[in-house]
Length: 295
Image (cartoon, rainbow, N blue to C red):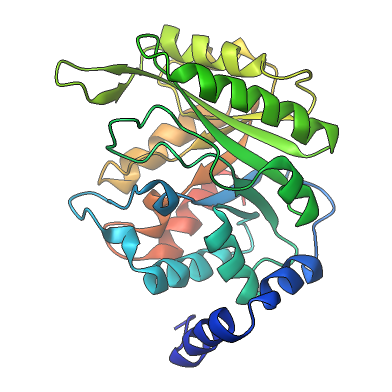
C-alpha cells in the first residue's frame, strides 16, 4: 500500500496545522532540467478531472470522488520510472507535493476548470485554477488550458480570448502552454458532443496553434485521431490525450499507438484510462502504455 494510514493521517494533519508547508513544498521541489525524457518523449498523468466536477469512470459516476483512492492510484502510477510527471489542479498537485511524489518530475498546472461537467454554462470555461504568475512563482513547468470550440455558442469567445492571453503570458516566462482544443457541437437535447471528424479536429488544431503573441512554447493536447493526416495540420509538439476510457484497455492502447508514430507526436497525457482500469491493475495499465512509448 502506497498511501498507508500513517501517511494519510499525516497529510490530513499538515493540511490543518501547517498550511505553510504547501509553500515550502513548492519551493523545495527538485525540478527536472528538461521537459522531454531521455527517450525524447513525455508521459504525463492527467489528474485535473475532479476540479471540473468530472468524476465518472464508466458506469461509476463518482469514481474519482474518493481522494485517498485517487492519490493512492497516482502514487502507484508515478512509481513507474517511465512516467515523467503529472498534470493537475492545485489541490491535487499540492497533495502530491506534500507526499513527496513530485521531485524530478514534470508538473503542469491546470488553469481553467470553470466549465463544470454537465452545467448549463459548461462551455464558458473560465480560469479558476493556476494562472501564469502562480505557475512561475510555484516553479512549475507549464500550464494546461482546455479550449472547447462550439460555433453556435458565443460563450466560446471569452475562453478563446483567455487562452490566448495565457499562452502569451506563459511564453514570456519560457513555460510550456499546453492547449487542449476540442471541437464540440450541441445535439438535439442540447448536450455537448465532441466532433470527431477529421475536418473539425484539423480546424481546432489550427485555431489553437495561432493563439497568443508567439507559439514558441505552445504544445497541443488532442485526441488520437483515426485519420493520422489530422496531425499534418501543425508543426507544434503534440501530446495524445487518453479521454474517457472505452472499457477495453486494448482498444484504448491501439488508438494511441497508431498516432504515436507521427513526427509531431511526443507522448501521452492519460488519466482515467490508466488510473481506473477495469481490472484495477494501475501498475499494469501504466506499464502497457509506457511500452507504446518504447519505455
